[in-house]
Image 1 (cartoon, rainbow, N blue to C red):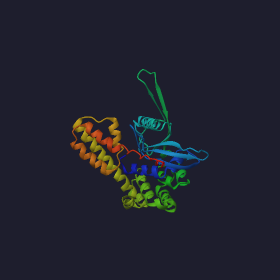
Image 2: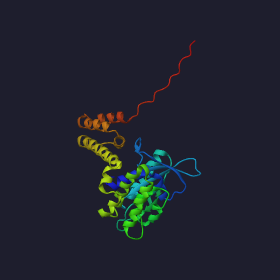
Image 3: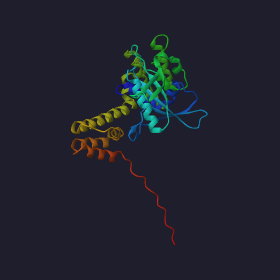
Image 4: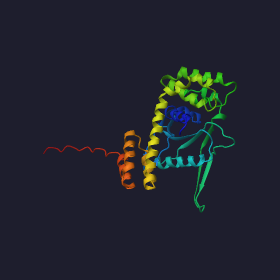
Length: 300
């Protein structure tokens, strides 16, 4: 994700997942936790995975949440890939909710997708719930129990001129935003820009200064830097040796620490072979063995 509103979507997923689960149609949500991407050899879990616990259930349920700023012709294939990744990694089929932020002509994200084998002897069918935000009533989010749903309200359907409506969004955040007040303002503003590009309207949420000073900007700026480092390393290896295995690419995506990425960048530029690079990569991404506790011998 490269646009500012993509970072806002990810922030809301990680910090306001309960509001997303409720907007996706889940009721009686007791708790909701974002599952961080983790390397599962050789699979990487998508970012939008939530563990949702509903009232009356002891176990949390996996909910895969995907965002599309605009409908895309390749969205069904991407959704199917992510659904299979989670299923293979966690041995459970998650529920899936897809949020589409803005319309784009007559293009729609399909609610079903089917994959058939070449000879037709195997078939997989996928289905998910698609939430087109511009078709949902804004009052559903603005007057709901979760202040984390307010940023989505600016993309939803409402009657009347935009300014009074956006002022209501600002008032709700001012009243209930708490410690996340400034970040919620920044996220709401970045999402509102998709629909209301008028700077005077965006100033209702604090303008450019609020966005620049938001912790969200620093957090996702660091993420963009990390992704850039990973791309540079991959580019070094492809330029020098012409190939990089899917397993090595997945391991590389799992490296989060800046110091490790810098070391891998330097090594990718000078290593003698791709095998040497992969060996170094494996050593960087393999957790150290857990210490074994030894029992004291009884004195005779």
